Image (cartoon, rainbow, N blue to C red):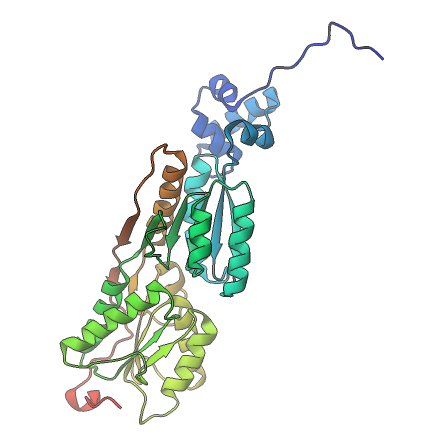
Length: 357
């Protein structure tokens, strides 16, 4: 079988061709194709008609072979059920879509072995960079970092062999301010329900609590009965509340709960046991407004700006991918903001019971 000499080889249509014909930028075409929802409806309709007319379809395989990039970012979290991570993911994706990058999501379920396997898997794929949330396998992360850029949040790495960025809220300031608020309202027997002590975020929040208590001469160590090490999830919040509040004579007058998920567990236990907030127990937390608006109380809390954090994580990983020079390690601590709710009851000196059991 022979082919006619009149057969015409169709020109490869590029995203630039689509942008030129539609009279828009390449970024706008990319946003339309990724359904980012940030394009004017009329413009989106115009761009889509040009895409259909030119029969444009990006060839990801050919593009990655040519540029040695896949435009894929790996995103690893400890528990995808934790809404903090889903809000961060949405903010990260908004930026990635703008630059025609996609995300590959992994959840470790808090299992160090599973986390190590995921990091090995990422290192074997053609992934341009990785954003790691609360990962603890230091050596695996360092090995991955030798192959691709890495940005961290939730748990930093102090090893000089890690050259990446770390972004998080100012966790020390957040817990210090909440504890100080409780102290200023007369509370002295203040418990803390915190996350795993092997995470930087947990250690910083505990240190903020410690430092605030120390102002009034109270030294609280990690093994104090007022301290509970949980897992940043609902069940650990529930178990912590059960342990710390089951004895009326021993229980604290107030609790600092260091994230949204554990706060839900605490409130579930209090509801079951008919512990009234703030009449029977004052509670404060660190979280974000998207979740706290749905609780049956209006808590006093420090708000972490997940939108800003996610955007910063995305832009830093893209900068490390795109730049030709080797960037130093950078640390960014974003401020948290105080919201005064109705979950703190002022105590008299007698009610406060200044002796910590």
